Amino acid sequence: MKEVQHYLKDFQKEKNWDIPESEFLETKMAILNNYMLLTTEVSEVAEEFRGIFTKTKQLQQSENLTEQEAFLRAKELHKENIGKELADCIAYIMKFANYFEIDMEESFYNKMEEIQRRIYIERR
Image (tube, rainbow, N blue to C red; front, side, top):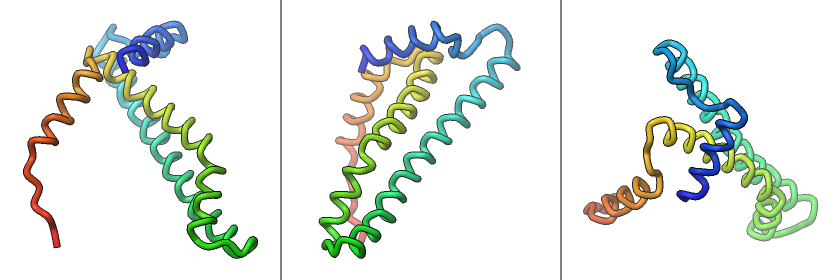
């Protein structure tokens, strides 16, 4: 994860896509704009999921497949696009992490440890 974070820091700087720190308003607008772009990418992941479910129904009817068979085929058809959209999400998340000087690998593992220590009450 550190390697990806460093790569994206350099990539974003090279493309002049990093969040500026010159003045508050410019920084604020850049953060908000990048947040909107991130939410757009998350929406595109959701659209791919919806596409899988729609394609599952189509394949089930047109090729007389079981629901599971159709789902597995639809999932494979959307796999590449989902990967691209998830990569876009990671790029924006890493941009925020780099701006705030957050080590995402450390934050990730700390959060997983925190979750591991939680006591979950099963809901019925």
